[in-house]
Amino acid sequence: MSTVAELRTAAQANWPSGYHSSVLTTPKILAFLNSVQRFVCNRFNFSFMEAVAYASTTDETRTIIVPPAGGGEVWTEVDTGTVLRFKDEIAAEIKDTNSQRIPLTRGYKAKLENMLIFGDKTAKGVPSHYALHKSKIWLYDLPYHAANDDNAFIVYMTYYGYLADMADDDSHNELTDVYSEILEYGVTAMGLRIGLDWEGYAVWWNMMLSELAVAIDADQGKQHAMIEEGIQPVEGNSMAAPEFTERVFVQSPITS
Image: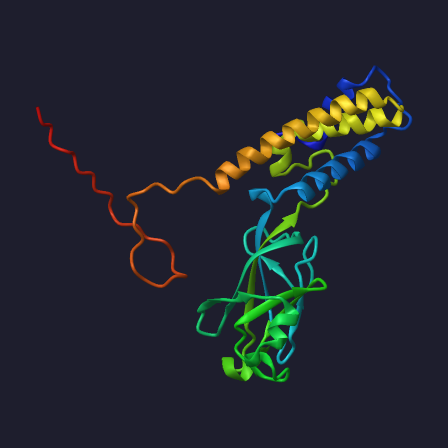
C-alpha cells in the first residue's frame, strides 16, 4: 500500500535535491497525483473502477441523473457508500416491490423512441429498456408506481466510475495500493516539466506509460480469464446467487 505521503516522497527522490521546492509544494504534488489518476482512469476501465449503485424512480418521470461523484441525493453505492462519478455503464436492472431484479435492455434513445412499442411517449408501466443520453438514464416505459403497489422502482446501475480525488497525506485507493509506480513516474514527469526538463519529462512519462500498459494487460487477464471447465451452474433463476455442482473427474483406464 502506498499513501499520498509515500508517493510524494518517492517522486521527490527522483528529482534533484531541492528541485523547484517553492513551486513543487505539497498541494501541487497532490494535484499532480490526482491528474495522473484521472489520466489512468480515462485510458482504461480497470476492474477496481467497477461500482454498483441504486436509485429510486420518481412516478411517471422518465429520467434519473447518472451516478455523481462523492455521493449525492439520488444514488447510494451498494458496497462502500461512496458513489463514483460515472464513466461507462456495464448493465442496469430494475427491482420491483417483490424484490425481483429484472435486467433492463440498453438501446439508443432515438431508436427506442422510434420503436413501435414505445411510440406512445406517454405510455407508463414497468420499465424494460433504458438509454444513456446527456448524463441521464432514460427509462422506457415511464415508471408507473401504481403498477408496483404504489412503490417506487429501484434502478441498479453497474458501471465504471472515476476514482475519487485523493485529499490528504493518508489517502490511498486500489490504484495506489497495486500500481503505485504509475503514479510515482507520472508525478516525477510532471515535476520535471515545471523545470522545462523536456528530456527528463519524456523519459519518466514513457516509463509511466510502460507501467500503465503492464497494468492494463494484468487487469484484462483478471477480467477475461478463462472459466474452468467442469463447473456447471445449477438450473434456476438467472439472477439468483450462483451455485455449482460437484466436479467429477474420471480417470481413463491404462492400456498396455
